[in-house]
Image (cartoon, rainbow, N blue to C red; front, side, top):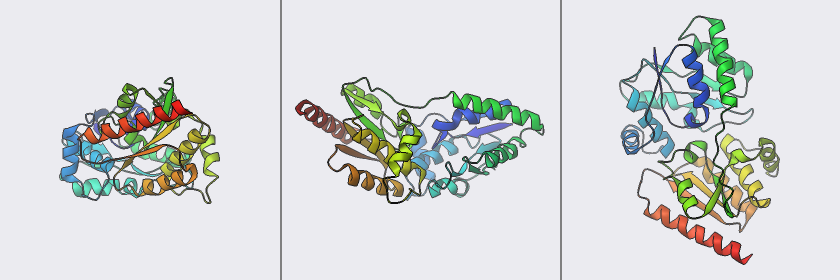
Length: 299
């Protein structure tokens, strides 16, 4: 059986686990190509206008492989951490895909509660039974997938540069070089090093979040706030670049929380959408780079 896996949203973070698990069950994995202009145009064609860029890109990935697979994995991610939730569009993603894109194959879309070992096992059992009735084979596939995921490290760390910036965003914005216009490479060419949230321990992020008057409701808000404030106040970086998808409600809140705490700390907010022209993007990066260099020289 051919299983289609779109290379969008949290694929960048969990693809090692997912692909290993289903390959061990005998599935033939069909993935979409890396994000490019074709994928973006396809997503823009099918997705509703009001959606953010990552959701539109995911639509493009799904549409590009819908005729190549027997079943497609469209994860309905509900929670990654206990008492924290994820963007509502993740929860309703299967319905969006089904209603927006015609002639879709059957979807593998059971709800995912990743924080719970029991619920995670139940999801894997339900998904695994589609490909094999052998419970022991499913269990062995789960153990192997878990092992490969634990050994997989996702991060950007070029902190050996004299001037460094924290690159903050949701994972799918950070690691999709098409939608973020290869920002890491651009910054390195300007002589700016990069640090991402994976470079600090999660316990530190949780400690920083305790400064807020209440625990963040959204998972990505906690990570972005905790990492940004810690990196800035502990002089791990000289500035912050926040990549935000246009129309992202979560970002609109967390950006203000970060700015309110860090006051006049250098922070550049870059909004990304379907526009692929890089001139304005490059100009803002160059200006921010020049400002950081002058500021660090004068300290």
